[in-house]
Image (cartoon, rainbow, N blue to C red):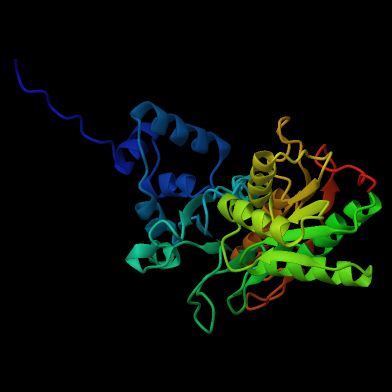
Length: 343
């Protein structure tokens, strides 16, 4: 049999010849430029489809000095909070033709290199930081940056869009108190958001004349820590009738502990989570949870980022700004909370 010949990959010149236009006009179409007529744009897109042309992002960036790329850094791909955040970002960024690249800072932590370095080397036009940054330049980053969620470190000049964690914690405590609970415990982990929720919980309890019952704070806000902290909570305060968890993932750990020791939810003890993730809405769990509106956090973060990228904006000011926007949470009541049982 004769050797098979590899088909030559079509080039931008092939597209231009097929569409009957210049190479520069093809480049304008690839950049989504408004300076191209609908007729010629359609001809170029038809040629691209017929030839199976795959434009090089690097070449497109060089041609127009734009990559239309946004780098998004998260710090735990297992946390469902990021799912809705990314959905909100995508909803806004897709329209103007930006593509999003996501990296988990913990996946390659052994390489001792932040994903942000890779994003900047690739020429991203903006950054969304959804995880805590260990090393931040004093002057911030050289591209527009938005921090999503309350973080321990906010780069200089970056915008911050977050859920109002303190207001959300108060919603949780007020809901449980409205059901007659006074012995309310809190399991928590590390991170700025968890810190704000803990502080607000403690303040709400003290203002109501109640004793705060907190376990955790140094470990991750994950399911294992939720199990460990809830075991400790019930050992220290066995009379606890309600638990407020720092997030839904920790609440899962609490539920696991309660099931193993034979306590019924909400008959024996009520549980409130935080994030109102897809997990909370599952019929089997039916978890009362604070909805932090993470999709809205993503949408607003993307809008602020686009405003920075496209230039000065009346709402956000000059690029060096530092806008802080808090999204107000709401409480979603489900089957994991009920009125306290009489003694």
